[in-house]
Length: 122
Image 1 (cartoon, one colour):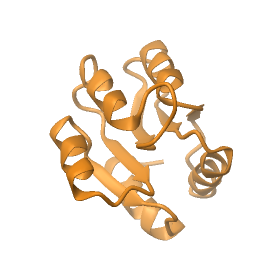
Image 2 (cartoon, rainbow, N blue to C red):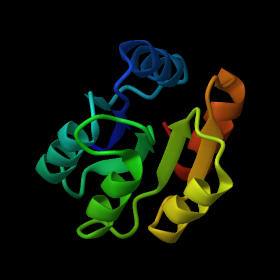
Image 3 (cartoon, one colour):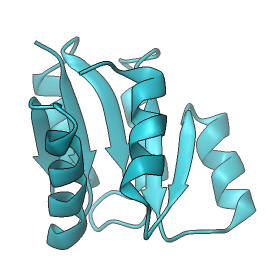
């Protein structure tokens, strides 16, 4: 069973992302409250994650550092950055470290799902 791992320090955003995924038949979802929590869950479920959806600005470990840490043991799973951050330089740094996509919050559910479905089938 493969999971989608959502990491965001906002309860509301985690909930919206989870509901959007569930409405589109994605049932296996892991949620993390910050980058450190996400890293621990990713390691505990190594090989069983189909997609990461990560915020950039989080406490304990930011999303770009998290991408670097994930890529140390998972070089292929797609990583979508979901953020309010519009700074092009941060986007490039995230991409250089292995992020595969970037979605600006607030996002449209339909647009978000098109990107998810490019990487994962329900």
